[in-house]
Length: 288
Image 1 (tube, rainbow, N blue to C red):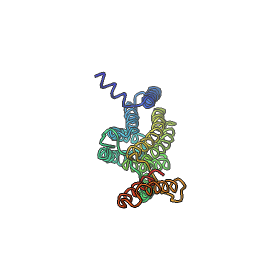
Image 2: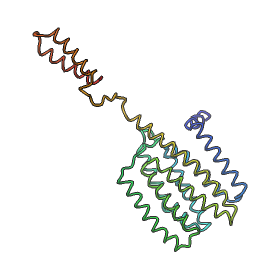
Image 3: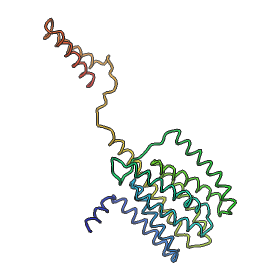
Image 4: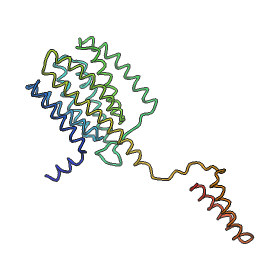
């Protein structure tokens, strides 16, 4: 049992363990100071921050936890009439987390289920995502306005950043974490505003401030992971590049080889001399 715990702990770096531990401490402290009885808020916050540390590692377990977090956060948003948040997380984030989980499981890096293969977006795909985000923003602005959503503009912006984030998560792009970080900034503003009328929501604001730090780390982690995977996927073959036939090194090497062949094979074996010329020329091209 102890060996399994040690193995699980060794999966994370010291920095990741410290980040998670400090995050849990801040969330728990703010809960007992401000929320006290809203245990769903505490549970959702702890699930969310744990999901983020797994997501930062590219581990599909993070997406499984995000499904649970989205459901819990949707209920919390409903209690304060943040219908945009409720619709975003229950109608978009939770379903997309399911699709992302499937996508991550189907695209492991070198067969390892604990790490997803990082993907790069093409120009056309990037443009399509931003166009769809603009359309979603416009549509939800009117929907949320009709529902009497509190703090309409920040709520609409939250939908935009959330949509970007879930799309990029599904496509396994490192920029998913940057989009979530932008979403965290919006949510901190929303819940700080809510806490002005109900102090118990301070803990939710603290939660998303902690999420912001974790998502920034997630972007850094995925950027490193992308470079590592690209480096690992490429064979360590020396790149010779193009050969400059006017290069003095090439000219001297070729002239010396010709002189040696002339001395040893002049008038003797022309076929052997030709084969040797080709072989020597190939070696000079590879090393010059």
